[in-house]
Image (cartoon, rainbow, N blue to C red; front, top):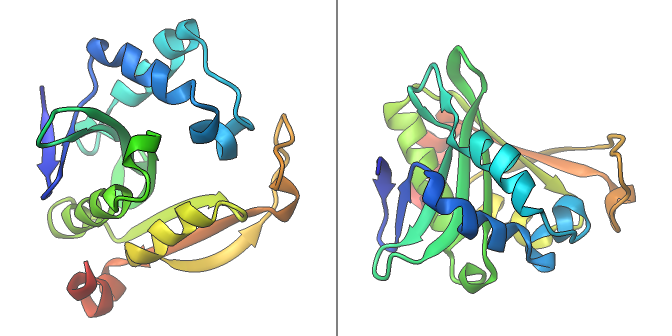
Length: 190
């Protein structure tokens, strides 16, 4: 098991085949999937064929995966995952931050803790220059995590999605954080 980093309460590690049921449980929770697909569960075959391979894929410029399983350090309980993935396979300059945690981890600061640790690692060890993240405008909890992690609102934008989700008519929001802004402001807060 490859551990990327640990925080006070979290361990972030690479995914493996044993995570299939964890991902199935996570992606079957209608509340977890609310802002992703309207709350529809992901099938076991889709997790096996699509989700797990995508989350396990190594990024060439990192020589690591871009997605990391999050576990509670004290109990080893699977909490969900974090994305810290370069937008291009050949450069770590711009990375996308994301997270999907099970409801047991909600409201405990785990998303903020993991996001801050990944941002710190990206800016201090991986050559990251810009972190970007996005969510639906109406996803207030995710937006709050982005703000607590030091990212700032950049824009609201609209895309055509295959299926309409309640709230999608209000668009998506993008947040970003540059290394220089993090050094000036975010590093002390994070």
